Structure formats: structure tokens, C-alpha cells
Length: 143
Image (cartoon, rainbow, N blue to C red; front, side):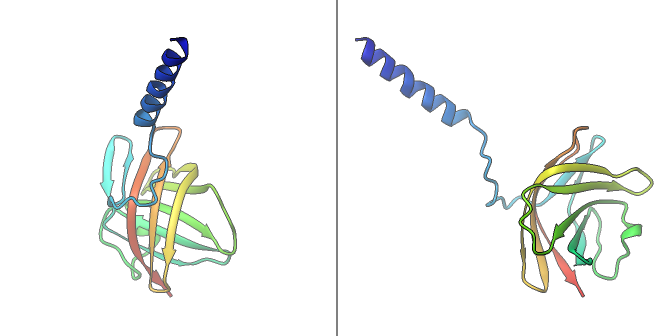
């Protein structure tokens, strides 16, 4: 009787834990990238990626922007530096707003695909102040 009861409790516990656990693998996320800063929600509408010496800079903006846009003109943006030839596990996502001090989300989850023409990036990030970003977006790769 005790063995049956123990088995039932174990099965119920495992079922409960599995049904309540958070899906940590968001690599298949197709939700358009959005981010929240200071109580405002932004949706990705533009951006660009380009080579830096040891990394690829990726900017995503909440307004139309492309290779001809200057980074200093971006009102609200996310920025990620993707190191070249590195197996980085945790990335830094920068939440930026024109006229404000940028906020870093250290050890963010990033996945990306680069085909020479564009970069598709998946982001899951959260700062200590509650800024967060999640989703997928594609930007042109500027040469």
C-alpha cells in the first residue's frame, strides 16, 4: 500500500513539475522582437548590422531604419555585439534611448543566423531594473 501511494505521489509530482515549468528553450520563437523600457513597449521596425573590428554590431530600432541610418539618430534601440570567432554563452544586450544612459542586460540569451545579406537574431534579455526584450527580428547586413 505504501509503495503504491509513494508511486502515485511521485507521478503526480513529476506531472505537476513538468506542466508548471518554464520553457527555457525559445530557439523556435517566431514572435516579433519587442522590448519594454520604463513602462513603454516597443516593437522592432528597423535596424542594421555591420562589422566592427572583433564583432558584428546589431542594432534594432522601434522605427524605420536601415543601412543608410546613423546610430546616433536612433530614438529607441537594442544593441548586441556578436564576437567573431568566439563561443560566447552570455551576451550583453544594450537597451538605449536617445538622451538617456543605456542599460545593459548581461548574460542574455541570443541566437542568430547570418547569411552575408542579413542577420536574424533571437533575443531573450532582462535587466535588473525590469527592462526586457524577447523575440526574433531580421536586419540587413551593411557592408
